[in-house]
Image 1: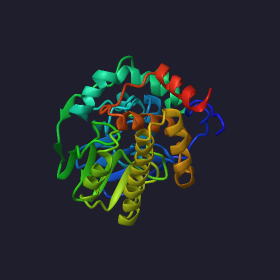
Image 2: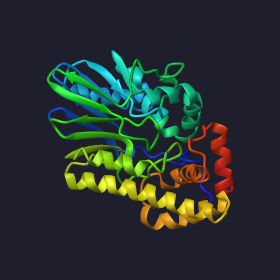
Image 3: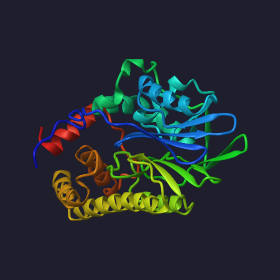
Image 4: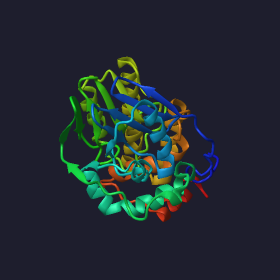
Length: 319
């Protein structure tokens, strides 16, 4: 395998943004596999789901929102704690930033390290990083399990349906419109990042999402899914990747192989089917390392630091 430029530092190409209407209340801001943002427009207020990585990048989301509504952006919802999702929050000047209690706890435990790690991995996704205010983005409202907001007569359910991408994963469900915003629990034509994942839980969590029977779904990365058939494809594709990767790694661990060998075997096993997905080469070292830990009995993900990122990359990619 050729050695690659560390993580996504070689990924410099700008992506074309789409802003699509899914229902009278739901829009999707997507960018060819870059992190998505969801928008819910209620009778009296707007909710933004995942903020983009910097306030300067968030301004493009705000500009598009203002093309369709002048209602105040009162709420920002964090689907999970990763910096690329949360550090643009200040641009919206929301009344409340909402997250699960588990996500809040992860920000306390590892927010600073994650911020440094992600900025090192994804220079392009942190354009104008100097515009991020000092410190971390702190939720002002937290919940456990389920929280319901009413934006006028629009019911907005904020749900924790299980661990997967992180332990704090949160989805937003509009029952009247049957639109689901999944965060990074679901990706479409984009490789799931699983460096902080719970592989054994993730497939069941996807079943719990499917049980809502969404007609449309905004994934964490990739195009908005506009039909039940596309939604099913997004759920099944994500489940297949997560399950196949964990099965390959678990088999290697059971056979007593070391991480380097397991990585190369898992990469070879998954590349034919998933190698064309966005950020495949970037995610695989992180995904396999976490799967190796979980299969070796480490229930909870270890904290990624900028230093650990580079050490892991060198060990697996030979640089």
